[in-house]
Amino acid sequence: MHANICLSTGSIAEQIVALEQDRHSAEVHADKDFTEIESNEAQRQHLEQQRALAEAREEAESASKWGSVLDIAKDVAAVGAVAAAAFTGGSSLLVAAAVMGGAGALGADIAKRTGLISDKTATWIEVGSAALSGGAGVAQALGAGGAEAATETAAVVKTAGNCTAAGATATEGVATYGKNRALSNEVSAQADAAQADNNAEAAWDRFEEVVDAIRQSNATSAQISAAAANLEAADSDLSTRLISTLRG
Amino acid sequence: MSTTPITLGLSLETDLAILQVESEQANYASDSAILEAARAAKRAHDREQVDDLRDKASHLMTSGIVQGALLVGSGVTQALSATSQYAADMDRAHTAANCPDACKVAPTLTEEGAAAQRNANLCGAAAKTLEGGSKATDLAFNSIATGDDADAAAASHEAEDAKCRADDAASARQRDQARLDQNISVIEEMLRSDHDTMRNLLRPA
Image (cartoon, rainbow over all chains, first blue to last red; front, side):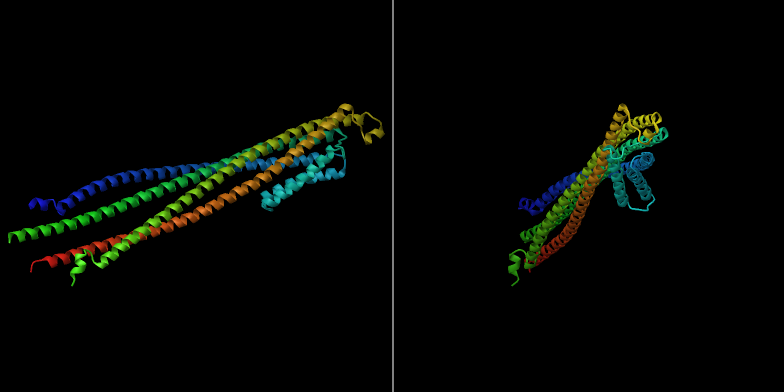
């Protein structure tokens, strides 16, 4: 009889509690490892994000410097074109178109940089100026006016202006490439930062999931322990009662 | 009178509480699924945003290469045009200096001078064409970059919406968990109460 009582719910409850404690302990231990891993991952991604943002700032500065070079090159090219156009000779209409084209591009750039007009307006003025210059150039190429410079001085001044404009245009090309490359690197670094931020967020989500699992595991374990304690108490009570009944 | 519920084990209130627990468990599972779906949607939109940024970076680089090449080409052809034009102009000046007065008004070119003039005109036209191409490329790539920006902004907006949904689902899940814990506590209390009642009834008179 005594053996039966020992093997009854009380001892089974104790064994269940012991098993549950083992399981709970192992689970919490594993989950803690996971939280550490995810926490480290989030920190690593955060550092990566900071690095990418710093790189983006550096590239933005580089793009700004190239932008300044580009603006100066545009202005020099426009000044050279105006100087050359003034000594082009030939049709006065073509000369006027070439001068207006160069002066328009130069004026638009200066007005944009001093904040007198918006970037968009400046772009349209530059496009219009380029059309004037281009039209004059094409007309000359078709022989509509002949690019005549009858004196050596005029020829030298015109050539100097044209060469200045040519060098400035080539510099403009290099600066455009440099600026766009810097801008591209900046955007790429921003993408890296965004990616790192997303990865960090995903790591935090997983961290929260694991913490939630630990919380649930704790609650379940506490419930099982409480139920087992109740069972043990009831069993003990029953045993006492049976023994006292048997003793009469 | 009161033996029926006791012999059935649990009281009706306990049965009800158990049903509530099951309901809360279902709510918890449902909110967990919503949370997971919202997080997955956010991750997808985040990836989309990053892809759009990378597209923009790629387009900027391509634009830089194309525009840079066109402008450098334009500069080189401008320089060629300038040197040829200089040769033609000098030829014209020499002709004017060595010809009668009538010729000075409209000086003619030698054969070499005419060839230099043709070369200057061709190179000048090519330079203008390349420069125009560069500006057209600039406008085209600006338009593409603006589109990339708009796509990235839209993806960012969608990701924010998904984050809001995930936050709402997480809050709902926490509330479900709190109610679940409360109901389980109530059931424990009821079980204890049932047990006490049974023990009192079984106690010898």
